[in-house]
Image (cartoon, rainbow, N blue to C red; front, side, top):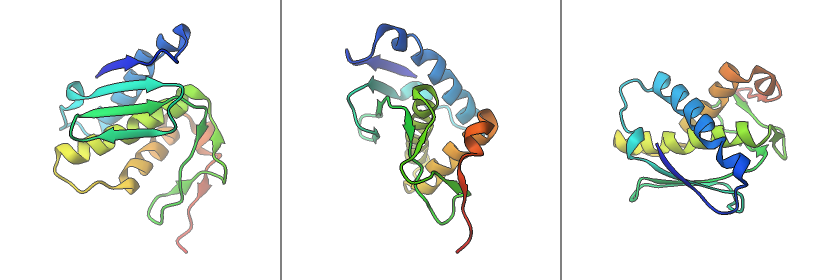
Length: 144
């Protein structure tokens, strides 16, 4: 994945971006072994951006680096975050943001309808696999 950083990122944090990208890409390549799309993506990281977005026309992903993970309650996802989110730290939240937005890119590459359920479930599954402490802080979604 190609990436750039806005001037808002401190130097030490710029050095973390390749590590975070590698963790996200490793998770996604295991989940979608048939997809060879990641090198076509152009990511941009910023401290001042609120949230993250995927721009399908440009294969561009904009990631805001923040410490609080927000996972909304979706009927078909296994878990959701407490109201107000979880303060997981910038590294974990950024990796989850990369996974979320890259999942949208995969959906587009496969000509599928964009789904927030798949993107959110991928974030949940990443936490379960790599950060069980934070996964256990999520609220199980009951089939109401």
